Length: 64
Image (cartoon, rainbow, N blue to C red; front, side):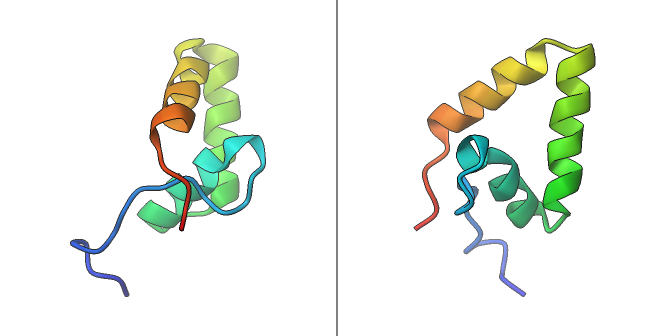
């Protein structure tokens, strides 16, 4: 298990729609499909979810 001091939030290596969901799932240790489902459901009910995704896509660095 990685220590929290070495953990870094990045975009995932899978480049489907920017890799934001993959990066968040890896950082928090949860299912990528669950994060993707959360973004899809959130975007259907709350328009701000799309804006949040685009902002994260712009500010998160790519995984090295």
